[in-house]
Length: 262
Image 1 (tube, rainbow, N blue to C red):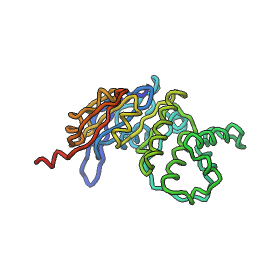
Image 2: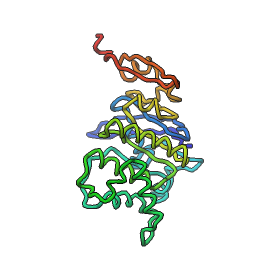
Image 3: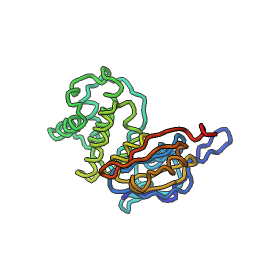
Image 4: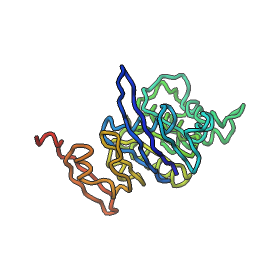
C-alpha cells in the first residue's frame, strides 16, 4: 500500500512562498488510483514529490518502507514515473525506445525475455505494428503511447502517470485505461494516475482522491462515494447532471459554470 504522511511543499520565488499543499495524508489503494482536481490543485506536484523529484517535508511509505529515504537507484527500481512531456525527436526505433525502459534489468546483451516483454507491452497498447518504425516519424499520440510502453515495460511495484491520456483519441484513451486496470489486477502493480476526465476515472479507477484548488484533500474513496453533484460544484465550479449506468458507474454531463449564474 502506498501512503503519504504529512507531505508539504511550497514553491519559493522572488522572496515569496507559494504553498502548494500542506501536511497531506493520503492512503492509496492497491489497484488503480485516480488523482482528480482543478488546475493548480497540485496533482502533478504531488506525483513529483512522491517520486522524489521535488524536496518536500513529510514521508512516503510503501509496504512499511520509507521511500523518501531510499537511494535513487533503489527508488527507480521500485517506481516508474511518466510526467507530462513535450514530445521529443529520436532516431531510435520504437522497439529500441521501449527497450530503454528496461535499462535497470538489461545485461550486456538483450535477452529473448527482454524482447518478449517489449513486444507484449507494445501489443497490449495495440502499437506492435510500429516496432520497426523510427520514433521521429510517429504522430504525437503514437509517441505518447511509446513513452507509456517504456514506463510499463519495467513492471515496477508502483507506476505514477501524469495525464497519460492527453493527445490520445477516444479509442486509445479507453484502451489505455483498460490496460492500466488489467495491469493492477493481473500483476499486482499499484498505479496512481492524474486525470482530467472524470468519466474515465469513474469507469476505471478503484479509488479516487480529489484535491481542491488549495491543495487540500476534498474527498477520497470509490467512484460511487466520491463523484457527486456537490463535489463537482464545490471543487470544479460546475453544475452537472449525474447518472449511473446499469453497473452503478457514475457518469457526469457538465451543464454550466457556476460563474455563469452570477
